[in-house]
Image 1 (cartoon, rainbow, N blue to C red):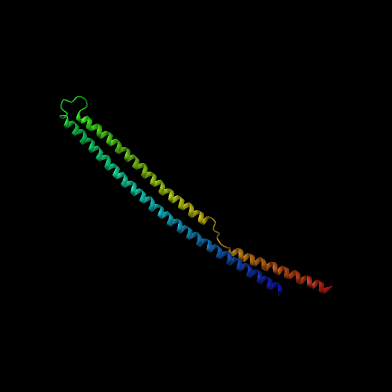
Image 2 (tube, rainbow, N blue to C red):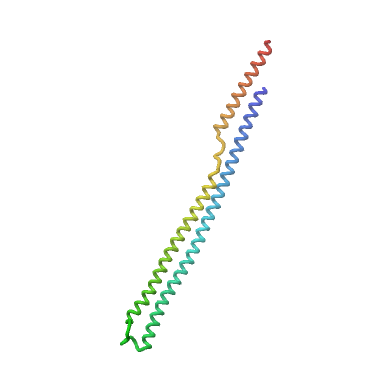
Length: 185
């Protein structure tokens, strides 16, 4: 009778430990899902922030480009006015009016090309920053799931109970045989 009580107590303890381990694994999994949701919200906000910065940079680029084009027109007008005030371009020694206009355009368009190249570098930078935000989120999500336990094994618990039962049966049999031998003497 005492061995049966010991077996029941051991079985109850194993079942209790199995349930505790399952509750712990469920709690860890729920915490990991909450952390991943938080990481994903942070990722979304990071992309929104980068998009806002990119919009501001593009507006700035548009204004800078407009200012350069305005400066080219201003230089054209200034050169034409200077030439007009000195009696026009007829008989002038040196560069022709057309050459002066082309020179102004060349410097202006070179500045516009540099602006366009800078814009492409800026776009590439924003793309890399977006990729970095994603990579950081993936890394954080992997970290959230890396230490999770899979929970207790039902088979392991069943084998533990079976082993306890076998051990209890062996102990009971040995005790019974030992008692009989002493009674026979």
